[in-house]
Image 1: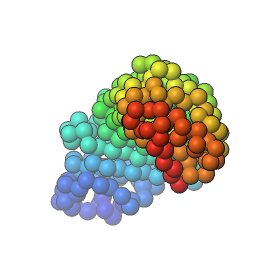
Image 2 (image 1 turned 90 degrees about the vertical axis):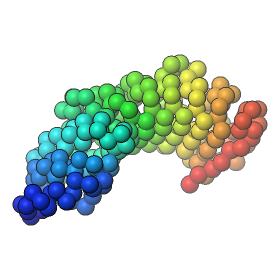
Image 3 (image 1 turned 180 degrees about the vertical axis):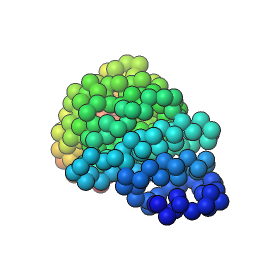
Length: 253
């Protein structure tokens, strides 16, 4: 990284048209921020953290890089996507990102002590994936502020306390839930525009309180491939009564 940033400004200029950044090891080097700042047309960034067991001095620099990348999203026609894998580190570094930001897609993987304001205040966010965050239902309920979200994927151990109420996620079209504990979130008269729901829990039993008849536009229902035949049959029976799905229930690995 140091050799790259120590080269001429002309070499950095060659990266101004780049759309993807990958393959760099940041360590404690603040050059990561400097490099991203020169790539004005950058569209996709994926950052993976590897905990060293000591305080990582690079985290503030990465936080600033994320903020800069998201702020510049307003100038790239809303196509910027960001993926952060915190590994064994804490994702709380996002708590320092407070300013106006814009992203189309965001993926967060790893432990969070709370849902960062950065997520709920993003403008233009249409795709969101949260994986292994260990957030509770009360934390996740703040996601309902994302009025323009079209796709939501949650990969968690337990989503029992997550409640989606009427008026939440008013634009959501696709919902994917990957859980270990076979109790799904409660959906109360919400998600009127939902067209696809994937409920991926191998131990899912019966309909788990989901009423697909309330989702009039629903076109796809998908279950985990390890779900029992009895549960699949119950879903197929419910789907046959739906005017669009008409009994079509797929299974995914």
